[in-house]
Image (cartoon, rainbow, N blue to C red; front, side, top):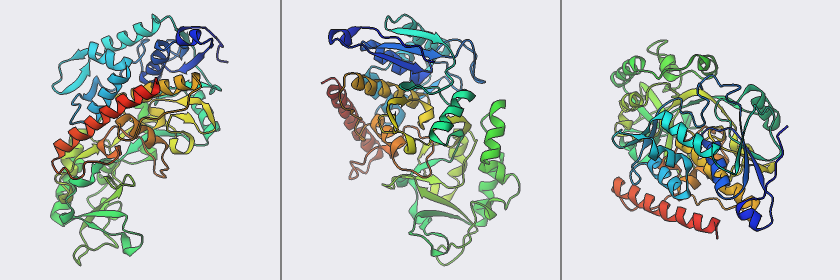
Length: 447
């Protein structure tokens, strides 16, 4: 049972309200939500099973432990989607962005941090906060209300309760790269469904024998990301990486996801074909069909760019394969991260289908905003889809039969400035619009 605790404080005390919020999980998302709510006068009980129990990936008793990388990606606000999201978060009062700026280490244009200093900053701010109570306890069942932010390694008991509640839960993340539509060379590609069946949903990237064999050689020899022991079984049993499939033989892909059967390009069947499928309704992003991969990001760009139609491809998301408990959010969550069947229960972090440290923290920060509005008995306001925060919020809730986790990228943003042909200039305009809109959102929230 979650401990019940009510306390008069801050803005709520002034208005005669007693407000208590339970936050489960002290990773990036839970820490963001807890700190934001406490800063705005709500009493928060933050539950985390450490140090009594650890996930297979965690070793420190501190909150916000970074386990995969010390990099929070690019800090380029006007030329990189994750850089833009970080600036939106800074303007919304993000604790993790404060911590990142405090713990920053030299890394060129990227925001990299000293992991220990980063975790220390967050932990100390939460433990010292007068409106935050810390409870070291494993929560094994979903609460009736509050924020669940237990991350990609949610404990078995709580994961089982999630399955009972929502009927489905993914226990690994195996996704293919996504490229921007405008970076595809359509003079080297063609739109056609196999045997002419369908409505032209696929873009086909043909290869002749020489091109395919060079691609295959590069694929099977490319450097792979390292998986931890506890990840190996679930991932490889559930979804085979394209490089593992290719290693079974030179023609394995040609009889699998790259088969050219039922397709013709300029009257001739290609030797092999990589198919692309629209990632969004607007058709601004395309998924590399059948190319879930565990290659390192730089290797993905090098190898897949060998396909003629993708020679100049811009990768909006690289393929990832790791242990990741996440919901089929379009079926069970609203755009404010609340459960469709219980608006008082919120979810945050990678378990909602956002991918990456920064994106997870952003979802926790947004949950804080939404819970605050609920506490003040005001209607929900979701950031507009012209902001990175709003676009990701809508992505996790939009109908999607092939839903997979998504990181910040320009493909999820609402369109605009299509007449601007210079990509750098257009990204700058999109960023300027997003930052203007996030300021308007913040003013509306507190208005």
